[in-house]
Length: 51
Image (cartoon, rainbow, N blue to C red; front, side, top):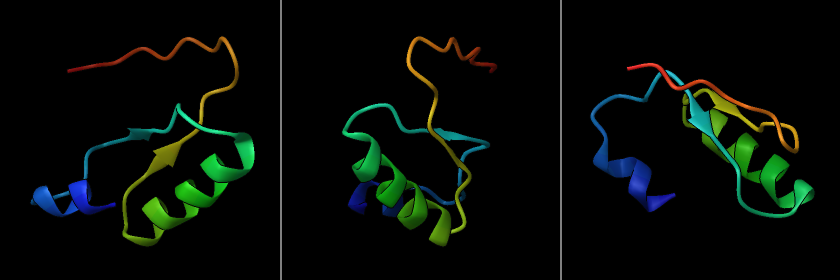
C-alpha cells in the first residue's frame, strides 16, 4: 500500500492480478477505500491497456 503514496492522483484503473482470490478481494477493498478504482480480472481474461 505504501507505493500508492507516491502518486499525486489515482490512475484510471488499478488491476490486481497476484494472490489468492480472498487476498485479492481484501486488497481491492483497501485500494478502493483510498479512492482508487480497482479491478480483479478473471482467470485468462484479456484486459486491453490504453495510454
